[in-house]
Image (cartoon, rainbow, N blue to C red; front, side):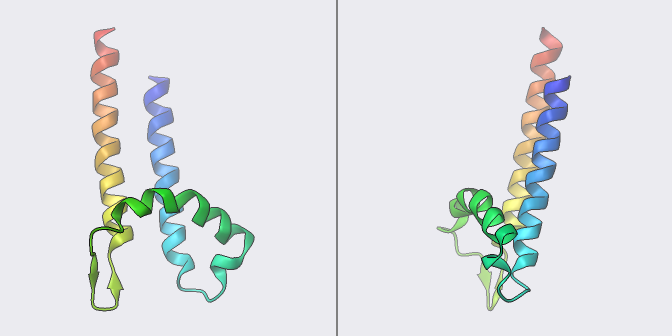
Length: 89
């Protein structure tokens, strides 16, 4: 059970990291701050998976929204899988 809680919290924290990454784009120079550099360093590897797919509609980029949706969906699937495995043990 503890493993499921850890995975759930990790997904929740990473979702907030992605939301903060999106919000930093509203403030000029925010990506150059220490927090901005840290957020970029931990969010870029995941977001780079979505760069091949064009998720722009005009000037609006939906990459973060799709990335958060996929993360939540995969997280729920992983938690469901873990709970079924742990029930068998």
